[in-house]
Amino acid sequence: MGIYAMDFALKFNQSIFSTPYPPKPSPKCRFLTARCSLPLSSDGLAERPWKVADARLLLEDGSIWRAKSFGASGTRVGEVVFNTSLTGYQEILTDPSYAGQFVLMTNPHIGNTGVNFDDDESRQCFLAGLVIRSLSITTSNWRCVETLGDYLAERNVMGIYDVDTRAITCRLRQDGSLIGVLSTEQSRSDDELLEMSRSWDIVGIDLISGVTCNAPYEWVDETKSEWDFNSDGRDRDTYRVIAYDFGIKHNILRRLASYGCKITVVPSTWPAAETLKLKPDGVLFSNGPGDPSAVPYAVETVKEILGKVPVFGICMGHQLLGQALGGKTFKMKFGHHGGNHPVRNLRNRRVEISAQNHNYAVDPASLPEGVEVTHVNLNDGSCAGLAYPALSIMSLQYHPEASPGPHDSDCAFREFIELMESTKQAA
Image (cartoon, rainbow, N blue to C red; front, side, top):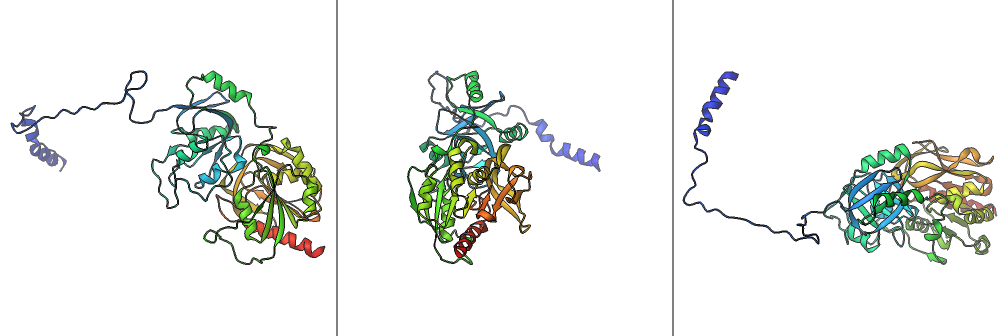
């Protein structure tokens, strides 16, 4: 069968081999000559019609990663961390807990939904820069008002793309978080930028003072009805809460307001005595950037408030509570950053998928007797929540408001309400 098929193919295509080459042009044919011209660059060479690599990321281990820039230009130094969230890059950009850091997104395609007016988590972008694999060339979302590149440029935030984010992530997982330098300045040598990365350190720096508010203010906005996912079973009793702004996210405040709290936000240096004068039903110690050991003034404030009113610590607030109770904190290898971290609630054995963003953790072995570890991160066994019933204390290492992330832990706000309510009744 194969022989017959081959013979047929040769006979069928024999006209190909008998056709004269090159064929004679038909008298009706007309030949057109197309010419294209490209603009010339300053050095007299033709510019390419596509963007070329014009940025560098240099890590303190000596590796150099060439990429294309978007957003702002210049040179920045920061700690490189990776985030495993699939969505919510606008909330990540405006999370004050990322101050002093370059955020590398492991999800390869970023920018396809643009940015909008509603999803900012603070008044500005505090992170040092954004590192992504692929920048979307178009946006498609009904709320979009501008592109990601324009948004970053307006806020003087650097971004790079077309870089191997998977390889960088593997390196960070193996070696731990690294200090890096982002630069679009061709006049700076690799050696100069490498020296910058090796002479700067994020440990021991008070980053909270750069993200906190300047004066107290009242917060009244609740979660909008179209986004409110857990409105069942709430009473409308009002609870007065003082929220310490160590880098607080707007959605933490919205969730508290939605649960019936009247909130006054105060700066990180607000005296404990002034807080107690306001006779709050509870105090919230918020999330924030950096090393909790670099802000001893905040630890002292927490100490002065403990035992006087119910308190709830989130992320940085959790770490400050750990230190105020006599425990120790330590820097993790590469931290937890993303919206898909499994956490076990040891009280009810329930597993929550959580949103996390921190590079430090509380050492549970250093905590005094009576302090209960309530939550454990199932990826590495680290402490993810504390409680001290005798002093009406509760805390979580992760973000119960998510934004971005799943809503499994929103019940923590209800628990804080119940803690304030039971303290009121016992008074």
